[in-house]
Image (cartoon, rainbow, N blue to C red; front, top):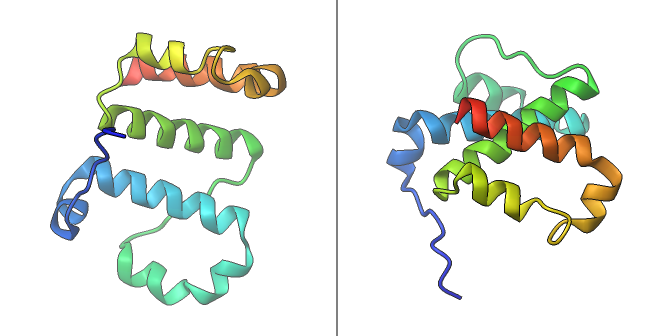
Length: 115
């Protein structure tokens, strides 16, 4: 009931590199996973983001983009690598560990080495 949820202002979202990266990555995955959105947001794409945007083309690229998003969120919450390993353990994520343990291993490894 007392989980501190980050509540950034619009100004913080635009100025903080971590928030900007999180927004852009989430947008990329949303467009890739929902191709019908691409047509309706072409104008937004050019207004929100300047420069060329490389959307993920392979499942591996999408997975690593999702890992980066998960790492950024963990960092925003101040989660340590040990806490992330504990939170993603089979005790809490039994189904995901059974279906895609490689994802969780890559997530914890990436967080440990890059964040």
